[in-house]
Length: 184
Image (tube, rainbow, N blue to C red; front, side):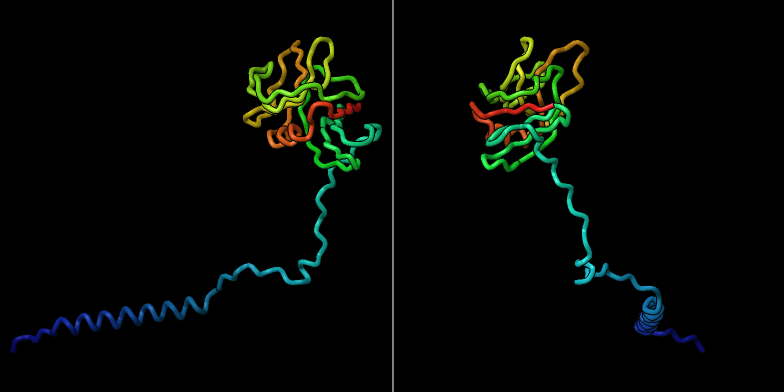
């Protein structure tokens, strides 16, 4: 008697049932294993823990006068924009040129929107306030926001550079006639 062949649907059904059984076994094993957990949200007690306070900005140097003014600290390489009530509105670091103004009180004499610095870098927001030994001294920022390269040996530069956002703030604040107090 010839062997009987099983219809193809029997084979397909048997293989499908076997695959479903294998996936079910694997799913049960996976369910019993380690489970990843989502990061827990901080509880009320966790958020009540003290956080370190952000560092307070440096105080306006003593002996820098009173009233609305720009304060430039030679030692700290820093500027403060101080309002009429003697409250500092903004402070930021600066990069000094090779010629520094003497400590004292000056007035913003003139301003220039853009030019090229003595180092060949395009600069903006130039605020002139002093001169020393024939060198004009002014605050400015590089148009591209970069810090100035180291000065060449023997060069005499009076540019005091800052970041672009700080230069824009100074430009708005330091109109002609604004007091600039330079402290040691």
